[in-house]
Length: 172
Image (tube, rainbow, N blue to C red):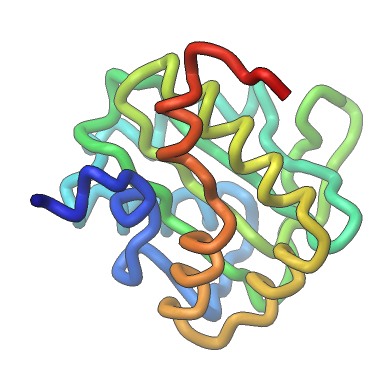
């Protein structure tokens, strides 16, 4: 009955996409996207500070071959309902590299995650990484001119509702 049961329509919405986005730093990008999530009622006022603090300890920059991407997020207690805010930066900003405390990644795509359940966060991160590894996807997002284009790319490539139903086990 309700289209939201499909899952992916809830994750990325046009009002949560900033194209083009200007940011001075990773913290600025996180703050801008967090403000958009908060304005939409997806996160609590504590989300931005929690995401910034988490970023210092667990960097989220991914050194993907096509276009650098970061997936900042905060713990579930700072989230009201699920969403992904996406910023496509005109000029890259440096994010710390995930899993490499000494590395950094020039990032052009920032996906700020609002996830209200810990187990969903792990699944979503896996699905995003799979999506980002699909050849051409990050270049298409980086080249998008409108929020609708970005939403469309996520709808085509973020296979999330399948993951929930297959959670019992992948047989491939």
